[in-house]
Length: 323
Image (tube, rainbow, N blue to C red):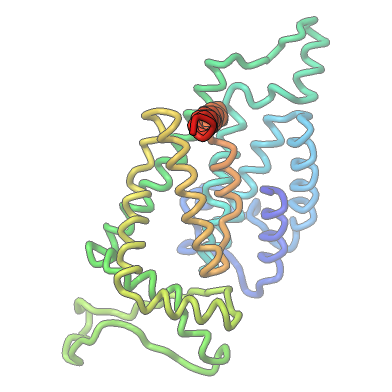
């Protein structure tokens, strides 16, 4: 998934005209990278084959940590370059960070050709095998990154949007996407608060805010549903409040396995709703949440529910036979 997304971004960067990097377009990571290393026409083929080779070798575990590191670093770099152009796509932000961390976490190579080869060399079948404590520690590190990601997202909403973000107007704006009412490039729409003309002075408190956005659900059915949902102030406010509360509650994943599963399932539901209403599926995020669930607890809970229902069924049969 990381390799596929990296190739898509590589092709996008090469296809954009006048995408020359400059100081203000560089993220803090890309600002530390020599300009010659950033993607351009001269090194396009190098990065193209690097991504393909690293993706394959990372999957099968040949020079696994190096492959993971190079692929993650390349993805983060290109993600920053795309942001420098002005496109803020979050779909790779969390996955690329987790992938980068995997290059250093113990247990990453538990099932790999590297492990098999090193086992042959050192004559140990369990070479680099991770025990449960190591696996738990590595999982907790990844969970920490996930919790911080959602927590900072919630804090950011309140920091820049204030308490007013909870009234639902922001989500309503994105869901309804009034830009779709007009042909691209044919209409300029100015949206904002009403202010007095005298307020617009040099270095005054007001300026021009510009934000591009897109809702990829363009079918009449989706648009009708989004229009109904976006115009319902109570529902939009409720969804906004629940969204922020969920994001701020990310650290409950460390309380116990059951709360961890509840949080991760809630995040999956949140992204599924976003996917349905806006076409932004965040599929990588949902896959990460599924993989991080404590499946032993899930199986135990399901088994407990099954036995409880079975006992109730047995008692009900006895009662019916007694009559």
